[in-house]
Length: 319
Image (cartoon, rainbow, N blue to C red; front, side, top):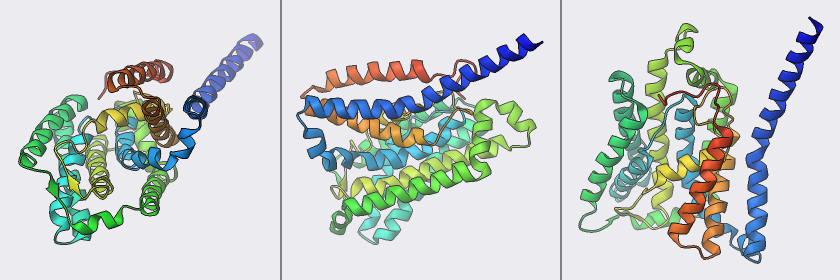
């Protein structure tokens, strides 16, 4: 009896140690990669910090919604199209009113999220299938709207392109997301759905309604990120938001996000992952690698992190 108790305690200690290592590994990886690229680029990484991190704001904000979706065990490949179409709407409406343009961008993203949520929840189609379809559907609409030329916004948009404003916006979004996820039943419900949807239903969670609202919320957040996206150049092109969904997925996995969601999800996955992705991409660019080589290296790193952070005990088909 005593031996059995000791064995259980040892097993729990081992699991706790593994969990701790998995939690700190992305942070350690971020520090190591940052130092490594600083050495390899003769300090250019530090001297070009502002340029390198100018890419992180949109990724961080948009990744918030995908983080919530992945916590439930789902996927969303439509984020790039949501950002692109919302950017076009923001540019069009900004000529009338910039505050109204921000609202319209959020509503555009929420509408696409509603589209995804309806087909996933009501029609019972897997999330990755629905969002891949909407990715191509709305990307085609973006190409159509920008066939003749980029959609120009108000000249006043570029006045908002300041580091201070973008940092404030990003911190506010992250702060609200952190509070909702860590300090309210919101995060517990998402983790419960990711760990086991049937069990969550028996626990009294309205899983279908929650999933639908999360897709709407995710779209709305990315619609807001469209404003941060367009103030850089004051216009939207056919490539606006292109590959954003891939960047977000890689960033979250690099941050230690379990691909199956559930109880092991941590909010820090969003922040560390986005920073890790930007440092990795910027470092490879500064070293002079071409696009194909960069994608190859990113793919290898991504595969390694998936292998490390996949929760094999609860891994299941993506919802």
